[in-house]
Length: 369
Image 1 (cartoon, helix red, strand yellow):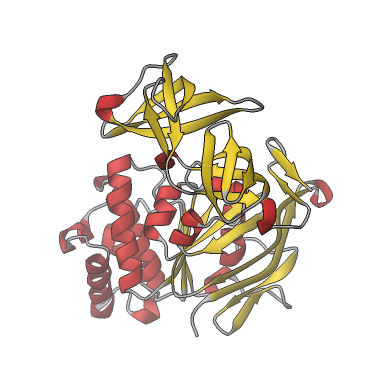
Image 2: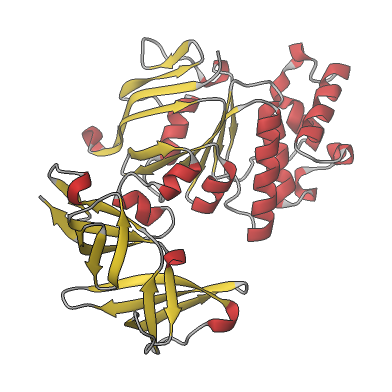
């Protein structure tokens, strides 16, 4: 039985455990790729190291297939867990060529130096889409993307039950990062692996993973398919982090909310005080005098070539909010200029009639009681 199950995993560091990094984490990792997504310092790498066996948990269990490897009795040592680990920089052995790096985990009993080992190396090179000719090269003769593929091939060669990848593409440039990420994802799926990919890049998580686990302050805020995490975030914090939604307070009546951005159609609630998650693709930029728009001041522009993002401030009767819009490359306003803003389509709302319980929705914006 493949898969990984984490229950109640807790880990603290510092004097007398004063800094709690993981706080009772639960996670089911089925076959496929699960991305653990979160900002730096939220506990992602600590989780990975606990699963790998490099650290011992303070509480909770880690089960790999039908074996409990941590948390009940003596922990299973890392070398006996059948887990492959790919660190950020690949960490290839500089004194070994590519073939020897890949075959390293096979061991002598598995034919590391014989015909069986050479055959396994060729299979792994095919899997990670590298030509057999690189087998005799040294790590320093490879590009960064090639090194990461070799690191994955080394991790997969012994046939592990789970593969752990700790931000493996973070040191690559943007184009190479995307290409390498897709190659690695194809290799993992082709091998039928169960994998955890730790990343702080939401685009990477959404595009490569079958399941996304959003983490903050040592806890998971939501674990779901990429489309669900993006389109139906569980909390305002998830909406803000995944997709850069602006959190805009308002008052909803009969499915329409009055906000600093004007009257907005909402989904998820009907009545009451709400917090709207307004994504950049829902914000339209017009001229400041166009009917139905709210005047806004351009604060910042980020130009990407194919398009740009515009951060603007809108002053309502009771609130001042900032939103981000995406605009085409040929229609980018200058910082400091006045534009018009309107919201297109339905916007996801939190609070109101959907949640009658006392709920704190981002204390910097709104508290619903």
